[in-house]
Length: 428
Image 1 (cartoon, rainbow, N blue to C red):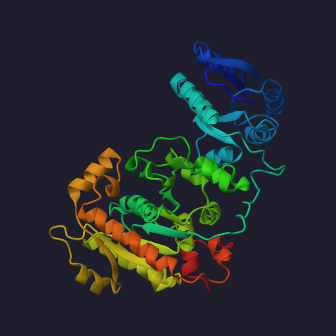
Image 2: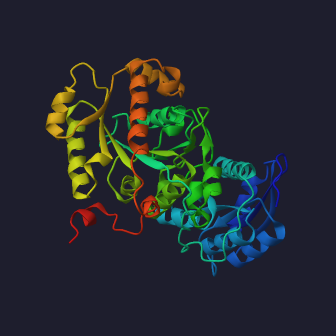
Image 3: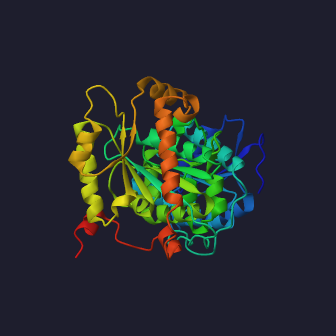
């Protein structure tokens, strides 16, 4: 079903309570761009009505008699893929949200909601669908249980670089964004940037990107994972870097599971020369899946006691996880600020060499962040930008001369393993 801009948004209401159906009609009655094309009370009726009426939007209650809203949404997504589902529920638990999104829902409204919330949600989902390429038909299997498709056989193998701050506020996101752009400028390499801070990602702000496409669009169709699906969810930055952003709302982070992240990074290795991941500041299953997949971990700390202490703890954990020493590069940000601990003293305390020291340039950093223009673009002649270009050059020099290990495809997409930190630290 083609969607035309300017036409009325056709809406099907699905709720087992007649009064609720009537209230929803009233909430939408005065919206001149929205048309109610039907209202039904069961999941079975919803599936048939979606096929017959071909609405743009289905307002689906999650708790229905007989076939529930999750199952009905799954069938509608499979049989009428142009219909976009907005799930409604009186319960807002993360499990409900995750199951709804995996069944194909694009939004989740918690009852009671206002007229403004309902209308803005309908318009947002409609506009997103209108901008998205024609939907891929999913396989005839249970979407909720279907495993991720393995990545395509590798023709080339790019490198994954994880930028990790063991303490918030050390500038890991700034370094990740600028490193990706600096890598791209070095010879026109194909570079991707992934915002792995799934709850409170900030890459969109740092790069002044506005979009409705995020990693959530990938994981809701992860059984169809391929280069085309990932590309459709990425946002191009004027620098030439392609960006995969974090979900728009914190609760949607639960949609992304460790196995999803491993599969996505495995596929992206075949698409890009470098994949830079701004990694979540904590050690849990999801961030460990990124760290495991990375060829290099850039550990960012500032020259202050709390950050240095956390960096030291991270090295202890990395050793227990059997990460090779050369995999982790310690980078000191804001290295020459007044009252800072000297880099030589940091090396002596942590017992690990410092790979790079990024100088302090508070004015340039703040201006770049507030304007949404990266340092290496807006202030490329500054000492801090030059230090970031030097870090990118070192990444290229060391990773591109490494011999390709045997079984590289297996490393690109690791098989199932115990991802829990405690389980892995204390396994027999």
